Amino acid sequence: MNATYLPPTSKAVSLASLLQVHVDQAERVTDPLAHLENISMGDLRVIDRRNGRAYLRDGSTITARQKNGEWIVAARGPIKQKGQFLR
Image 1 (cartoon, rainbow, N blue to C red):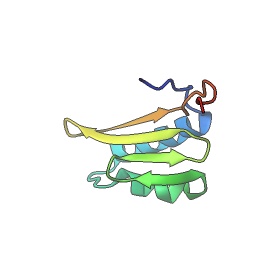
Image 2: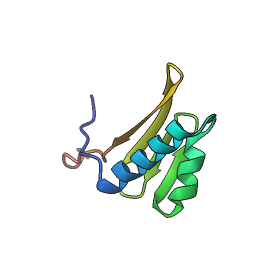
Image 3: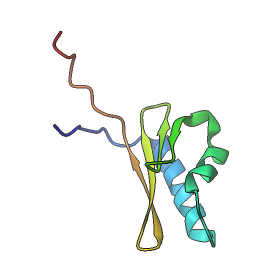
Image 4: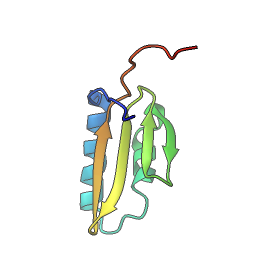
């Protein structure tokens, strides 16, 4: 079953755009999430370096991955709650 996501929050979109500008301007980037950690430590809940994701306190996710030599940064909103599970 695929999850349904809400639109990304404005905070997630602004952090993702800041990170995209940084990786575009930097000559050599090995860990883009380290820069995100420096600029928004208070907004981050968890950084998953293995999967290239940063989870924000509001439930949004910022993903940074390398594709064809370029870094792609994307923001995704929190998972939509559809109700409670059956007990």
